[in-house]
Image (cartoon, rainbow over all chains, first blue to last red; front, side, top):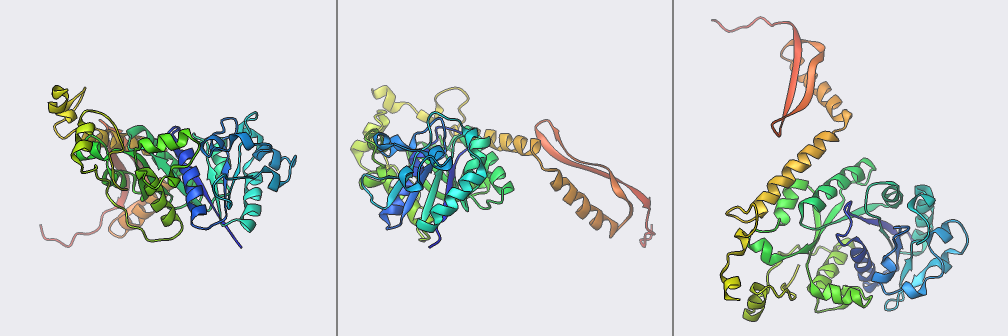
Length: 272
Length: 97
């Protein structure tokens, strides 16, 4: 068995990389794959809390790389999905304490046992970024529809291509369809036009994602959540299914529109 | 509350344009990307352009094998490809003047 290693990156911080990693990992496991998610944000680990596994950490990525534990000891099994594992980042070290070759060796080992290795990349374009993209065969860039995040995404696409990671795909996160409709937010076409990049999916801004994350449950488990449904479709595309991109639409109900106009930001969207 | 409902939301705030802030964002992103790409342009790109341009030009004119000037320049926020090459000898024109 030969698995595939995919890096989730963004350039800019705070756009939803870690949440995306957790949901893609869970989504691929829900589809019956054996998956390991790898937090490479050494010093600022967060994938563990997003997945609700923060109390189960004994060993971390640096421990396994420096051979203080066995690979199997560093892998934490997910609460919900028995085929999903997390290797957490070290919290007390820094990003320069590992290098790209060590991480690549680890991923090559994991590829023997797992279908997918999903790497959560730190923000920025320094050593931590270089480490994280080293082992990857594919790259996914997460952005929000804002000038700052998109500018950084463009920079990262250039760096990925220079590192032979061609045709990275873009996830546009936290889209607010009502604002797009009013002409107050960049839409998919603007982004494709300016960045010349393939879109892997669009995720609506969604209160249910926040409540799920509060509980340490990836929102993909919430069947009613528009963002969770978006992540399901993104996962299917990663897994090779031909799922068409849908435009996000504000929800049609009168009360939703009234709430929306009053600024009560409920889940205002139907699909991604 | 009624005020809030009536207010045309896309015209709020500083720098709004008639079609909402999207077009401003688009324009600003376009300019920022061009500026960044200009600053980060790989020397290999210019080198490949140099080779190809010389090939094409020498099909029509006898020119020196290097450019006197070849660069992308930024002027007033726009970008220009500026190239000049010395012509060694002009061809004999067939046209009747």
